[in-house]
Image (cartoon, rainbow, N blue to C red; front, side, top):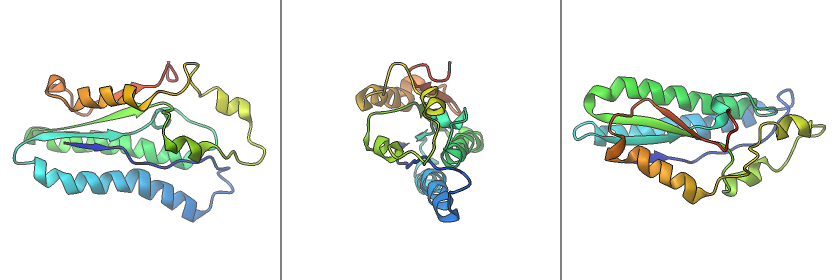
Amino acid sequence: MLCSIAGIGRFYHSLEMTPEQWRRMIEVNLTGTFLVNQAVLPHLLDRGGVIVNTASTSAVMPQPYQAAYCASKGGVLMLTKALALEYWDRKVRINAISPGGVDTPIIKDFADLPDGADMNRIIRYMSPMGFCQPEDLASLYAYVASDEAHYMTGSIVTMDGGITL
């Protein structure tokens, strides 16, 4: 089993984002997820197993000042679905979880707003329930990875406090 959870994020004005900043976001969030999946898959193909990737609500809805983050997490979503389709007949289930804000150290990466950012645009994409706690999200990862979820593959499960209603 693999739970691929690592990621980075930050707000940028898209016109001011450097190619290096864009590449780093894509490399960590999307390429990193691909490489970890690729490394684990050979070990799961003979006996079956589960991969749970981490996307984001930003994978399914636009977020202001986060074009690279949205693109990288949208890529994780499609990577998950493509791999699930490719390996479903080898008894490997591949799903993703799309959380909203989670109270983990990545939150500090989103603390710096770009100059002149419209806070009203940002606030409208925040849950009125606040941030999820890691232990709340952990139970969802445990379920998606469990035998109880044996019929899930290529699924994207959202836990976001109502952001995507």
